[in-house]
Every structure is written in C-alpha cells, then in structure tokens.
Length: 480
Image: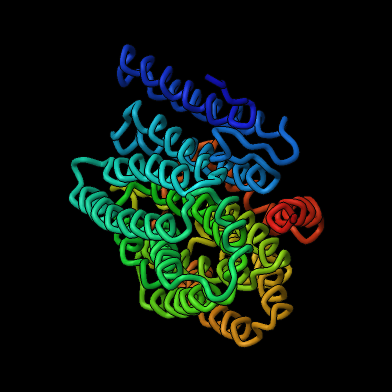
C-alpha cells in the first residue's frame, strides 16, 4: 500500500483534527465553553491559513483528486478571512440573543473545511465531497435559532433546494463520466483537447447540469430563490457568513471547473454564463429597489454582485479570472463591513432590520453613519473606492474578450443598483431622526468595521498587493 504525500493537504488535515478535538472539548465542558471554543475555532482557521503560506508551486495528492496551487491558496485565504470574521462577529450577538451553543463555531469550522476541499478539488468526486461537507454544516447554522419560525423556515428552504441542486450536480457529473470515461479534471482536459469533431451532446448536457448545481451555490439567477428568505430568516452573523465565505469558495470552484477541464469548450458554456450573468445583474438591481428589510436588500445585492463576478468568468481569459479574484477580495471586505453595521442596528427591544430605522443616524452616531455610507458608495461602484476597481477590472476583461454588450449591460445595472445604496445614505443623512440605536458595539465589531472601511477607502493607494497576487493566481489556470 502506497501512502500518499499528504503535505499539500496539511491545512485541511489540521482543520479536521481541530474540529474533532473542539467537539470533544465542547461536549465535556458544555455551553460554558462557547467563548473559548469560538476563539479556538478562529485560531484553528487562521493557523490553517498560515499552513497555506508554506506551500508553493502546483502539488497533487490523493491520486490527483486534490490540488494545491497559487490559485487555491489565494481563494482559501479569502475563505479564512470570511470564516474567522464570521465567528468573531457572532460571539457577542449569540450571547445577547441567548442562542449560545458551542456547536456553532465548530459547524463554521467544518464548513470551512468543506470550502477548502471545494477550492482544491481536482476531480468531480472530490468536488462533490467538498460541496456536501460545506452544505451540511450550512443547513444547520441557517436554522440555528431553533425557537424562531423564520430561522427554521430558512433552514428548511435551504436544505430542500440545496438537496435538489446537489442532485442536479451529481446527475451532471455522472453524465460527464459516462461520456468522457473519467472524473479527473486533468483527465477530462486531456480527453476534450484530444477529441476530434464536436463534443458529445450528452457531455454538454452533463456540463449544463453541473453549471446549474454551482449556480445555485453562488445564488445566480434563476437559481437564487433561496437567497432572500435564508438571508432574512437566519441570524445576522450567519447571514454575514453566507454572504462571503461559501460564495467565494463556490465561485472559486466554478472558475476552476470551467477554465480548467472545460476550457476547451468555452464556446459551449460561455453563452450559458453570459445568460445567468445578465439575469443576475439585472434582477439583483431591479428586485432590490422595493426592499425595506436591510437583510433582504443585501440578499438581492449579493445576487447582483455574483452577476458582476460571472462577467469575468464569461470572458474566459486570464484577465477575466484575475478580475474575478480581485472582485471577490473586495466583495469580502465590503460585505463584512456592511454586516458589522447591520449588527449595530439594535435597540433595547432587540435587533431592527428596516432601512427606515437608519433615519438620522448621521446625527445620532456620525462615525457609524460615515462607515456605512463609505461601504454603500463602494458597493455602488463610486470611484475612487474599492468597489469601483472591482468592477473596472471585470468590465475591462469583458471588453478585451469582445463581450462589449455584456460590459455595457453590467455598467447599466450598476447605475440602477446605485439607487438603493444611495437611498440608504439619504435616509441616514437627510431624514428625520428615528429612535437611537444602542451604542454597545463590541470592540471586535468596531475593529472589523474600521479595517473594512479603511480598506474600501484607501484601496486605490496600494492596489498592487491584491492585484499582483490575483494575477499570479489566475495565471496558474492557463499554464499549459
């Protein structure tokens, strides 16, 4: 028996071991261990990120089913940031809302492990295992507030629709295996490049089912139906988590799958990606116009942002993938900061979620209002904030790839979506003051909000750190 070299997967092995040890620790200590388990989970995720930094080059393990390269390391670091910040944001919230359970941070940790597997998947089988490991934990945390009807409904909807999408993805993978004779990404690439004539219709149908399953995971239209209800019903830190880490991991998998083994079929899948990209941008811009619940509004906003990211994927070029990576990094900072502001929307009666509760915030809490406004301007793509550069790299890649109409539709959708971001700013700065929010924002939330706001404000001063790393990560997918 040949034992594989497990060094490329050391971060995943560490996360798995940490999760099991913390689970045992939590069982013996009970709910009194919530705070310590939470911080230990954050520490474990960060240490796993440090392990990622030790690797270099392109390394395979588990018979080629798992790949560690610069692309995986870049996206995994975004997942590390998203997951660890989501746990930190939940500590005080869960305590205040009396839903403290030691299982919560451990579920986030196991979900992070699944995301790591997704990003490094180099085979349809490992792809599915990573996807399900992530999803099973997410189904539970969506319904974590067990005494809330909305939270239970959110978890049930996500589970039912998630099971449907997983079935479609698995069916597509089985069709691809049936027509190509392999599940390996490298094997599929060799088979498709060496083929003569048109690819088999069954293979294309299988690819469409595969795209459908992944489109659900990134909540792209028309597979977005779960997003607004789950975002509204889930506890706010869970919604923040859903909005960043799982979406980044699914987008990373989406890009690796289509650019890698199916890159030769660009003309076949490009039209599908263009369709769902346009639908997501337009629907995300229009549907949010009538939303008054801040979490539902951010749900539709996230659908629109996925549409913009898919523009880079539709380009099918190295510049397009670079744009996707830059966009997801900026998207992470904007969303984490925004949900910190949402967590600050608390009164003595509890959390409030209506955008009109923000009325007069600039007079009651000017610093919070300034940070919220900066993040909204960035999401709208107003220069010189970070959100503008995210869209800039995406649209430039689309134009270079000859997708001028797609880029124009993206710009127009961005203009429409600016309305509901600017409406929030107008409510905060120009409407009559509503009842004040409690000022009890924890130090952790304040620190995260400060860093996120500074990132979007001053990104233009030093964009090279993100851009250069994204460029080297994107190049990996086009080597050979």
